[in-house]
Image (cartoon, rainbow, N blue to C red; front, side):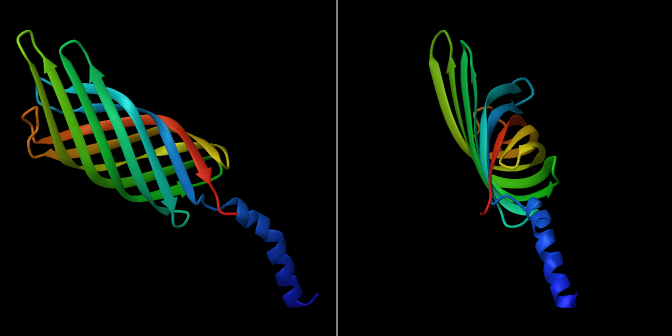
Length: 185
């Protein structure tokens, strides 16, 4: 057999193997999220809500993520709302069973607080800058579907006028959910 024919045959036989190890073009995540707010020494709070993201992948290891979340706490005295929108680079390690990723996200947050006391009601809103460092693990169920078993971030938030009196907050966010992947055809 000629060397050119041998290389062509080898290339045709290895093409399906290479196709199995490709990257998804986009990944869409949605799920439950827990948010620990470092408001001040006596008022640290636990909020629960949702988290969603879209990641566009340039290659197997590098991509760009847009992340949004909303967290809530309601009781008789206080109503808290935190909304965050961030974007930034994402780095991933992929194999057939799982995808492990790390990201650094930058963006903004909006805080809305309402306090009801016996004599009066007080409402405050604040906008701030947020930087998040974190990552997670997705377990692959199929090539187009996965389960995010954990996503965890440290969020550094800077408010110009914080309701709690603390302008810089060191918050934490943990989430779980499902991932849908979209591949090139």
